[in-house]
Length: 621
Picture: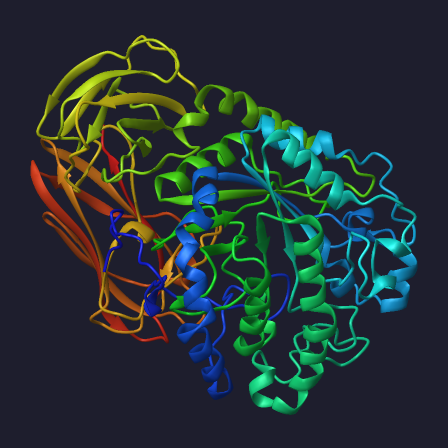
């Protein structure tokens, strides 16, 4: 089934189908499935929540998340004692998330504490940090109060030695940031690692000092609390004596607008719900993200989160937030130079808003309190774009228009915003599917835009003899009445048409989405012959195209597949040698009118057929 952009928010229950579940990773930097699989032990906690405190807490949810939905764009900050190392330990750079220093290098607790004593960010300036966020158009800021290393970067009354009190820094950076955010009208909150703590002898995660479950050795398995319930009281002691007390401390001391949690699967759902219940008992106005307490098809938080570092977005229902970072690490890494371009991140922001999601862009400041110059350049470039076009993303959401080949669209009241990433080569831009009349078209904040015509396919604009923003040109369309559209995608006769598997119609249950990273934007778990993917499109006039396909053929993949559109109907073998390559498979001549492209299994000889990224129709000149 295909998720409609117009699906209404469902009160109380935030659902996305089980067959949309993403792929899991059980150890390392990131686990892709940030939810619990409930056991018998959890049922009483679920029942208590749904029949009592949680359902009561939902009564003001719409008001609670109103600012967050309007905010649209925020700054995520990963900063702690690990920032001093910057991805280098004992003179050698290491890969992975730099904030996972303690786990990756298996540093003993006492040695890490000795290292932490040198934390003294002399250049930290809350005003400077908040101004970076404000200039970039960000409306909220979230910083790590305690990451997985268990080290609180504020003066806590709990686990004092593993906190700012054991460093050379004698200020409270969280209070200074809270004050600066309030001064500049930025909403403020904390990331808190509630389920993963490498210093506490009772918490999941540290298997090099304590032989605790939840670490890379997978002692007891991913759901260790199910296979070894006798270990659970130890983790509950951590929740009672550190996790809940510190969360309450953060709420009562700093009065955050939002709390952001992570890795819920390290604890059973019953414990995660106990933490959420404690939060709601003292603050029912604070927004809570989707990585505290949730199941595969149900979330007790206020919204869903994507996986880390997305490049494409699979369909979500309800409210959601993406969490890209400027390079490949969340904490500062001097060795990681894989920074994305500002244009990539600006377009990612527009894409997220076009699909109804927020974007929380991560920055990893250095251990001395400064932002990396590479990050500053990115933020400065975003700031330039936002000064012109902020209104097209902040507070704007998804429009019901079909996918546009040149970019994406956002909508705010009677204002339709066209985010043009790719200029049509013939100088004519079709706003496909727009049926109602308009008042005007103009460059956002600029001069009127020439209108060529409006017909059954939509609105045609002239791009000839216009100057263009090479990153994301925003054209404002003022509507004369509530937007009216058809949902059918039009093929572009002059430029490549990317038909992403994420955007296809999924037939039969069982499919799973990849997590959306640059190499993971596929649809997989293709295990049954009745499963197939299709894209309904409309061809204007007659045109000949080359057909390209891109898929991932893993070791367990195998079989044959049929690609069909118009008079093209051919079958191909899944080829491991063609994995992750754009493979030309033929040409097709399409006549004017409705078309459907489909990819169907003919045989499945492996555990799955393949993982499909996309089909591309390239016009033949």
